[in-house]
Image 1 (cartoon, rainbow, N blue to C red):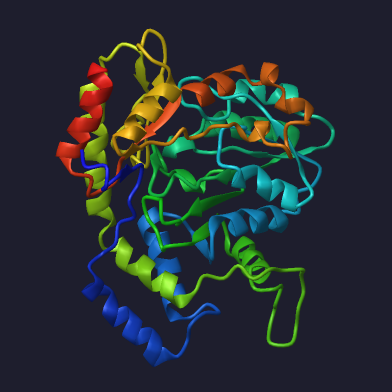
Image 2 (cartoon, helix red, strand yellow):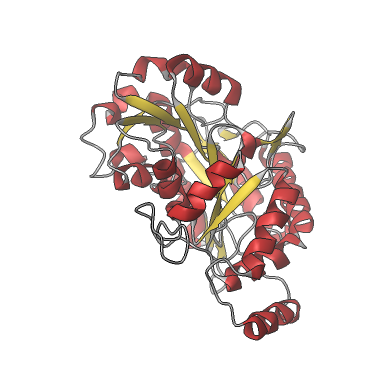
Amino acid sequence: MNPRKPIYVTKPFLPPLEEFIPYLEQIWANRVLTNCGPFHAQLELALCEFLGVQHTALFSNATIALVVALQSLRITGEVITTPYSFVATSHALLWNGIKPVFVDINPNTLNLDPTKIEAAITPHTTAILPVHCYGHPCEVEAIQRIADTYNLRVIYDAAHAFGVQDASGSVLRHGDLSVVSFHATKVFNTFEGGAVVCPDGRAKARIDQLKNFGHAGETSVVATGINGKMSEFNAALGLLQLKHIDWALARRRERFLAYRERLGSVKGIRMLNDAGEKVANYAYAPILVEPPYPIGRDALYQELKDRGIHTRRYFYPLISEFPMYRGLPSSQPANLPVATAAAQRVLCLPIYPDLDMTTLEEIAGYIAHR
């Protein structure tokens, strides 16, 4: 492999430039660049139709969306969450003055383990913040039963879960709110962006106010809001991306299954259980490097990197190991044995729609025959 052309975990899909030019011309003609313009409105409706949800509120990015989602529900005190995620999950809690309480994960899905939640509930607990890790759905029914029993809110960090379905429809419909990411690395992207999926118009109206400085009209401000609006440029790109999303998802599935076929029987390489064609979006291709594989995860990571293959130890370190979290009682490794082990073994392989199969064969072949 040519080291001057490195292969990364993801490569953002960009539709042909000529397809975007009409959108750009329309933005110039409209003279509306932001503040919930026509493309913003169109994308919200298009996403509701594609995802099978009632309401979406677009944001400049998913981190701001998560901060606002927590604010909209007036979450305070303590929130039970996972240490096995990107730091934005817990950062959103700290930005709202909320204390994260970390609970261990399920070894098969790497999602928040519902059997560990109740022991972490205190009189200060107000919500649960699970993550659909790698796009695999959480045990939503079990989590909701606990939330109902203890009168807790549930906000899903669904950054990875665009288009993911379960037996009854979109996984984004679960909980009080779900937050999805449209970052450049995601299955569906608007360069930067995100959305809150809302169950009803009242929830959307409050979130729309909060993302626009708290405005309730030209001269009325009714909440301490923030500027989280998505621009017309990003919304237009999203509309164009939606035209190609089925193709992109199909190509991801082909590549994921190719990895599974080539690595599924390699001793010491464990792939997570396939969530199924009707469920998964194949956002990531994680493997766990375990004995009796001849070398450890970090050594394999470095050997691949030396060959121009840039994998990701995703998620390593755990959120609970960063300085602003490691002092929390719930952050102690003894409290998080499954998450700690997963963070030391996980490696996400390159997967994106235009990853050519020859390159994939080379990556899988090196891992299989190391």
